Length: 328
Image 1 (tube, rainbow, N blue to C red):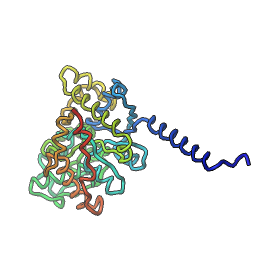
Image 2: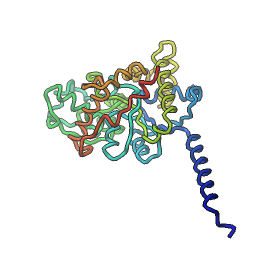
Image 3: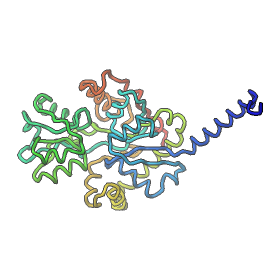
Image 4: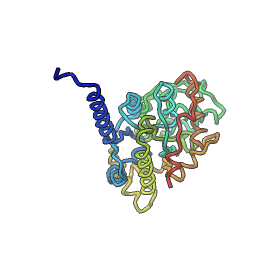
């Protein structure tokens, strides 16, 4: 008899347990996956300087290779993850709900198609092999460049290659060009002396936006914390863009990825970091690459055309500009 609780006692216990669980949930840090891209390595500045604590938000940044970061997010192990806008849709197409709430940057030259010596333009690739991770962002970059040069994908032969393996693939002589982002593209050029970029993201600004996309439940329950994260990001961008502090920022970022500061500064230059004011402009709904909406619609077309996922998505449902727009 002593083990039997009355209904009222059970109700009180349930409420108490819920309160404890809720308190524990709020006590947990926001878990954000980030990886080796300058616009995301930039978060290291805020991490090392304790700016999240100053802002009153507990954040745990977890370091991943890029694709595993998406896998961890899809498995529910992260509140948010740093990805391209196109890959946010890729996760959505596979059933992972997510909401892009902030922009970190757009690629301004760090994503590139690199040709071996003798390959000086995309037109020189006709009939040749290109090492690229099919269905990912460099594939989109290649197609964009081919189209601008009056070519199609059928003019080249794609060799499906993981992005972090492209330097070795280019050095092997198996392909005439590769598609990769920094630092992989830079490593490829080091391994193959005389190789050069023949088309980069600087040729189509806004083709590749980089974002933090978040779990909708985390967004709904911890909106104030996410607003603080965005505020910290604005501080990061201003620190990196300030000539008086960029050297310190480069030192911090370079240390995260095992490079020297002088090696890392050019990578920063190939990334257009977006502060809150700049992000607000990109969040305006419009067609074309000047808008996150327009760029994402183009990525949506690409993803369905190449069977990354079957049916086109409602792009608007993956974008929430309200937290960025609420910033002063």
